[in-house]
Image 1 (cartoon, helix red, strand yellow):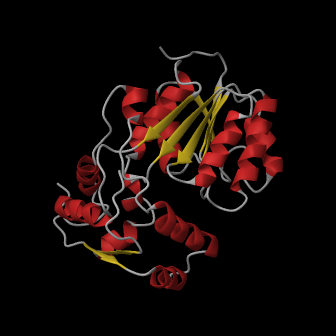
Image 2 (spheres, rainbow, N blue to C red):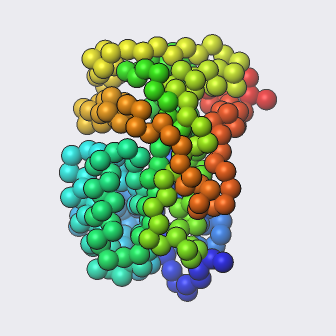
Length: 281
């Protein structure tokens, strides 16, 4: 049963991103008041301008926290720790954190959340399926060549819709406070496997090639990618993707009582939108 609270407002940080957008949409459909936490929001929210936080938190009874660009970047821990404490002081009664599986920096942020004195839920997620359709891997897939500094390491890619469903449950229903959900898809695939799945779904030729970290960095720099994002992507690809995350986890089943969405289903649905070209019937 959902928790009803008159005049309750949920602040969704990263509310225009892959998970935050989905969380906000689901909350609104269910009749909950939502405040989008972004630079373009009303009021605006900026992680780098702490003076913007109080207005975004004013009157909020719960918050979904997706830190941008990632909890692994330098300074992220200090920033989210300060935000958690500010949220507690403002009267927020529930905090849901999107965390990164296998990231020591993200686990430090989880501990900061647990110490903030507010009922919490942690969503420790593996890499998103939507990274291939809405993010860093989209243009390479469209070009037919996914070149990355990773080998035959498997990752149990998780669908962002599953993450959003869990976040909404944690924000609106009882039984999720104090829970850490480790969220993955139902099976692990290498990046070559993922490219092959997308190729089958689109009817296109999509190749995967392993490149050196140095060559990948040079390619990102040539494309004009900001240095902070270059460093972040290289860190995640060359450090976190070392096999530590290959085992699947049961977070979706634990939180929702159903299995997670498979990458094949994601690829078919995304292909049907025409996002990658090829057939989309």
